[in-house]
Length: 121
Image (cartoon, rainbow, N blue to C red; front, side, top):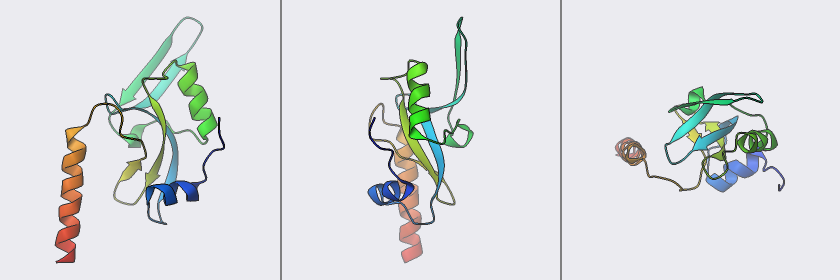
C-alpha cells in the first residue's frame, strides 16, 4: 500500500475548505450508497450492519486499519475505503464515481448550487 495521504493533501486534492475536519476513514458500498456501521467476526461467522448515513458509520483512524478491515471482511470489489470530512452543515465522503448513481446526490447538488446562487444575488 502506498503512503497514507495527509489531511492537507486530501483537502487540496478534493478542493475542501480549510476548516473541514477529518472524521476518519469509512467503508462505503458505492453500489448501494451505504456505509459500514458495525461488524463482528468470529471463526464461525461474520456479521455486517450497513446504514445510509456517514454520520453513523464506523470510522477508522488510519487508511491502513480501514483497508485491513475491508480485506478481512472480504469486501474488495464491493466496498471502498473513503475519507470523511465534516464541513459544518454536512459530511463529505470522498469517493470516485463508481457504482450506481444515486439520484438524490444530484438533487442535493442542485439544491446546494441554487442556495449559493441565491446568496450571491
